[in-house]
Image (cartoon, rainbow, N blue to C red; front, side, top):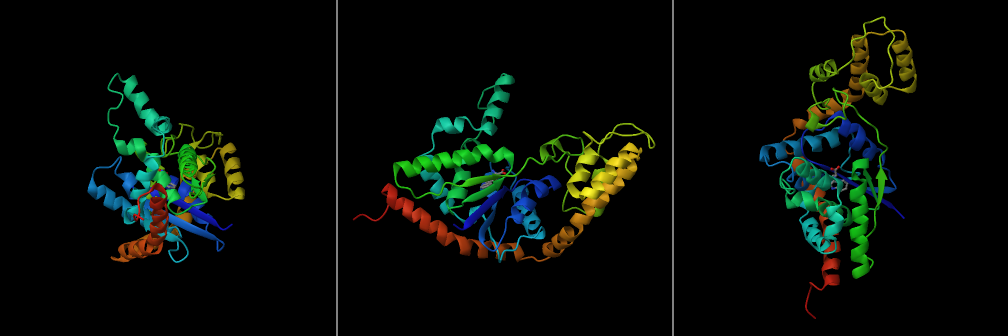
Length: 332
Ligand code: TRP
């Protein structure tokens, strides 16, 4: 059977090199002539955490440009905005009526916030909106609406994928076997450390930007925390943020040479220079494309309408079928 790859990115914030390495690049590597691919911007998911409309709009633009500059070809893949396919919400409601509340109670992201609230002695539902609680149902609808067979996601989304299968299985059991149970392609845990050594994340303020200028890239690399060993003193490459980042961009030979340089006492300034070169070499063509695309005013709106035109009939077909199955259709 033909594989149908589908994945989305929530449009909050500006993509950083962690998003590029962990989500965009591996997803694009799955595009092949004998696969269908669906890549979309999960802009309704973004409303859960972001209430500033300007931020939402800026993020949609940047995430879309990040996909396109990294090589997404809209002729070859389906590329669209979640919000342009309102059938996703119709399906979300239908699935809400199959999804057990107990299942959603167990979602890690939701449970973590409840646990924090309890720890701080406050109301356990503090700052939890229904969007956050039912996030996995909207995600299930994103996937099931296009009969996706394979969904590349990070390890943090594995539970959401299980939930999608659960919810689809329950619907199929109740009505008829119509929803495709998707397989998760869990991208191997590549840990991308941020400038402070913790996982790179916008919420830690430790990101290395990806679509920035060279200067900004240099600046964030300069900020990476090291120990105080002097040039000439042997250094340990293990558990070293600079080395970890370098390994994500360099080839095997360069990585080996860098290990030897650590033993020989390379100075931190020189490691940072080499890291800059390694990241920059990969990013230069992407950055150039980004700047070129950014200058085309109607590009994204045109792509979004083309994308919606291509995929919406499929969404309508599935939702039509489900409406009939549940008894909401023409009276006979
Ligand atoms: N939850 C995903 C994330 O934060 C984004 C997402 C929304 C998604 N809908 C999806 C990913 C459907 C894959 C398929 O990373």
